[in-house]
Image 1 (cartoon, rainbow, N blue to C red):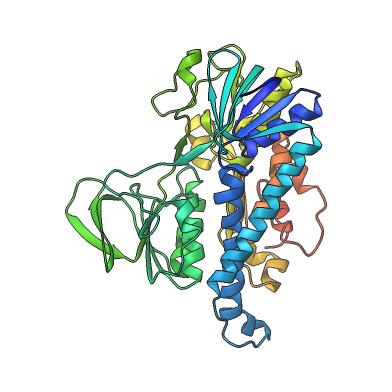
Image 2: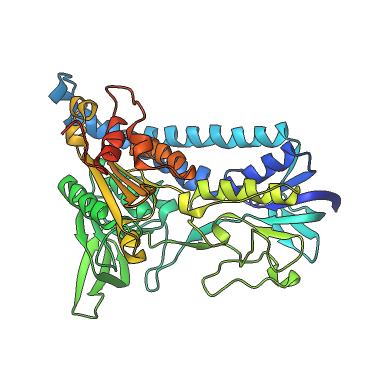
Length: 468
C-alpha cells in the first residue's frame, strides 16, 4: 500500500487530463495523474484523433499516387498497398506522441499512476495499479477527465472483427471489399474515407435524413455530393435494427426511420459509429454524491460538480465532445482551482472533418442564425476561383461567412476545401475579438494561398469580392 497527498489528482490521461496536469504543474500545484490504459494520451492519441489522421494521410497519398500523379506529369508504377507497414507507421507515430506526453509529465513534476482511479470519498482516490498494487491518494481537488467511449447500437454487437467500432476500424488486418458505416457523423465519414481510398466499397447508413448533424446545411449538402462523387453510397433516413455475422460477412437488417419495409444489406465489415457517450462507470461518483444526468454527463457549474473539491472536464461534461475543447476545459478548470480566472466560450470551439476535402466551421450555422431572428448577410467564395487551389487541382468547396446585417459582427464561418482545418483558426481569432467581416476583408493575405479564399468570402458580405 502506497499513500500520498496532492493538491490535485486527475483521473484520466487524455487531452483533458494531461493538459490539466501540465497547467497544474506550471502553477506549482502538487499533481498526480491516473490513467488505466497503461499509456497516456487517452482515446485521442491512442485510438482516435492521431491514428485516424495517420491513416487519412497515408490513404490520401496512396490514392494520389494511383490516380493524380500522372495528371501533373509524374509517371509511377501502380502503387501497391502494404497495409502492415501502413499500420506500423501509424503505431510508431502514436508511440512517439504518447512518450512525448510522459515527458511532459516529468518536465512539470507530475506523478503518473498507471491504473484505474476511483473516488473513495471526499478528497480520496484509490488507484488499482495495472501491476496489481493499490495506492491510496488524498487530494484537495479531484478532476474527472475520463473522456468517452463509443455508443453501442442495440441489436448490433461489436466483436472488433466483422463488426467494429472506431477502435477496431483503425486496425483492420485487410481491406474489406465492402464496408458499411452505421452513422454519417465525423468519425464514420473519416474512417470510411480511409478504407474507400484503400479499395473498399463504402455504404453509409444514417438514421437522419442528412449527414453530419450540427454542420451548416448548405455545407453538409455540398459535402455529401462530393463524397458521393468519390464513391460513397448513402442510405439516409434508415436505421439498422439487427446484424447477423457469418462466414460470408455481416447481414444487416434495415428499415426506414419512419418504420417502413425492411431490407437486408450485406458487407464484409460493419463499422458502428453512431456517436460517443461519457465514460463514468466504476468511478465511485456515488461516494461523493455525484449523479450523472440521463445521458451520462456529469452536471457542472464552471467545472465544479455537486461535490466540493471535485471537478469535471472534457467529454464527461456538456459541450462539444472534442479533444481541443477538453484542452480548453483543462486550462480553465486548473486556473480556477489555482484562484485565477478560467472560462471557455463553447460557441467558439471549431469543428473539423479531416476528409479530403476537409470541412471546418466555427460559430453558428445559417439555420441557427435564421432561427434566432437576427438579420444577417452572407459572403461566399468558391475554391474554384482561388488561384492556389486551381494550380494544385484542389478546387472542390467554398468558404462562407455569416455576419450580423447591422453590426457586421461575424456570427459563423463555414468552409469546405483543401486544408480548411488549418484555416478555420483565423476565423476563431476574429470572432474571439468580436470582429467584423470587414476586419478580415481589409487584412492583407499572402498570394497565392488558399487562405485568400477566406478573405474573399469576407469581402463578399458587403458584395465587393475581387476575384470572381
